[in-house]
Length: 353
Image (cartoon, rainbow, N blue to C red; front, side, top):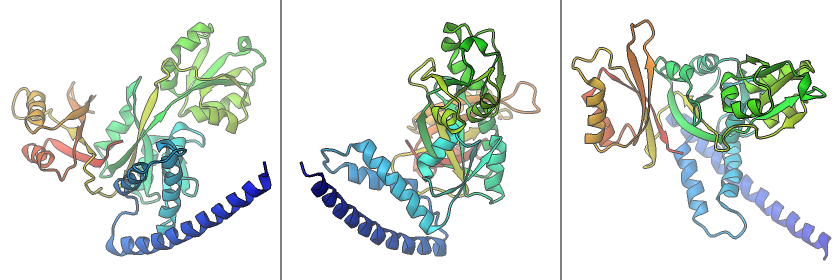
């Protein structure tokens, strides 16, 4: 086996790939100028999905769909930054699951801004300090993120994309023994996702302190050998906290849905989802929610999510957040909003993941 020969072949292929990428980026720069002149959004999730789907339709023996998507998401991220440098806000700090989700979509070249709260991340886009905010909206074990839902009804920003990411927690500490641990830090939702582990290792009685993010938990655990963190493996590595146990979540199917919010409207892709806010507290007929759900069915719209939230400042009145299949420009979805002009708020239409 002549390794030198193989390496020479790979070098030649890499040279060709780089030349082709240069040609692609030259076209990307021209597209970016045209988008800016036409005031068209740089980020086009539906176009990126169209490219990935087309490439995946080609037969490949070695590159599966996941590999093709991983390669091209990074190419897209570099391309977007050539069109227009991107600034992305996220719920931080560095190493949080939201940070991972943001980098999975926008790549390593973007300028990232971490924020201590979801509110701050949203405000950074509203004030044009960032182009996008990546925030959690739902976990398949613990349900919706109330703060995100409450902010969506009050902002004029729109959901432009969604990201589903598996969540794997680890238990990290600089303690010599698990018996030495007196305090556990994590995000409040993570404690609930790892309750079986805590019980099995007799950690139920240990003080639990909720913090803004699991990455912050790793930071705090690094400072005190009597403390531990429930965090991501990346956060533990980032803050040099030894991992004592991996994959400690109760459910291996634990996933979080993140959304990307910005100030533009997506074009229709044919595979869209629309999010809406329904304020029915002052509806002029009894059974207002029933009638809304009936109209959704009557218009042949598929509803995929509904979550109630208390209306702030009211006496046990509730509003509803709903996801439906389709785009705001689809005839049946548009008709739904026409039937409830004062009760429904459009939160965004975007490519369904």
